[in-house]
Image 1: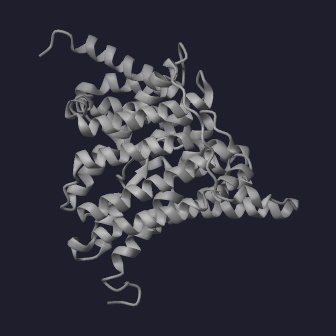
Image 2 (image 1 turned 30 degrees about the vertical axis):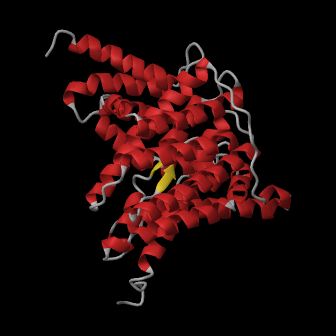
Image 3 (image 1 turned 60 degrees about the vertical axis):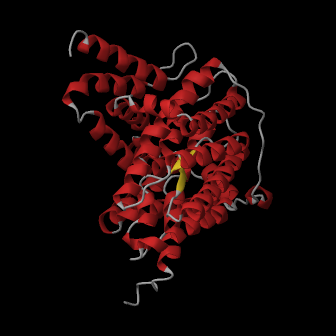
Length: 392
């Protein structure tokens, strides 16, 4: 054992802490951006961040303890990006909360009724990934536009990300956020500004949900599809690659309940972790695969601790200079965008429908009060039906 390697008994615990830190710091800015875009105030967005942390932490602890596997939950980062691209809808924030609650119900039904899961599985992966890529494109451009809007604030963030993307990829985005924090704090000190301490205290703001047609079609259905296709299904596959068979039905029911409970407080979606799942389930969590379940518990506890600081992170976003936080969010989505583009055009027979889906989603054009994400799926389906009509 080297001086840098923790004792075998501690490795799962350390892996869980790392999983939570990387998962939180690399994408919380995307979550706050998405919640704010669909109408949340700064306080409601901070409440949503706290609610998600509590729901994720609870899901990690319950699933890992019950099934003795390092099962980790996460918020839907692609779903948050979808919200950022959708913007406000008819009914405002209460309607968005209603959509979040409906997503939780759909995930629960997916666990209890296998036919719904089979129906979602029939959606061509290229279509769902093309929609996601189109949604992510404007957000991924933020680091580029930020360099023009505010070079003094954004350049340190981008340079930090680039250096650590080369030498420590896992920490590239978290450390880019650290650089953004330095920029924010430095700006506050230079201006002599002060922050009301009460704004930094954790709190929940409950919103009575309502449902509107635009919320159901424009937020709930695309959010459900993106969460299932980009988080839950890959999350199961990643766990399987490490020798763990995730209990699908309980996992869907528990994460669905977590989503439903977090929704009134502003949480958009809780699901199985995908990319970060490998941190808790892989070799870094220790050589004994039978003991890695403690990494899942450690992840859950760490999320609860991070949730207590949700208002602090939300305040940093509010106080940040122009372009800085969008740049961090865009950098956090580069890998997801690249993966979505690759999967969207991987099948030559589905390439044209996927391109149409991508372009409609990237356009951001909303019609009849319904977001571009929904119309992207419709357009891709129509093009596919026309191109494949009469073929076997």
